[in-house]
Image (tube, rainbow, N blue to C red; front, side):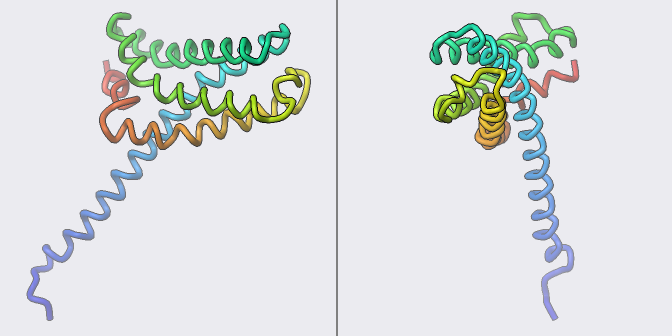
Length: 169
């Protein structure tokens, strides 16, 4: 029979359960942040790719347009609820930049690189399945790559963790 009190033997299991719960909560928040960021990126990316390829812009011009719109929509989706909660634009801008910049950057690098690497994807244009399938795959892969980035940021009190503190206003 063990001489260790029952409460002492239970503590490591309780600690493991609380660590697992904290990890699950962190994963959930990181997933939510990634989907949120991916939504803004996808809106801008799709618009930029459709406009750029429809207008016959070069690949570089199309990517530049898509990236610009992805950042615009990504930041906007973060800023709108904060502005509606009563925060001033001067307070909201740095929050949006701090919470989204790294995630959007990672997503944009990955999804545009994939679009450029898939043969014919950029030339296919919005009337072809190759264009849409490539863009969908690129965005899904970009989100997958951004998830650990968002998880890492949130675990350190950065990224979307900064914005979530202000949603209660």
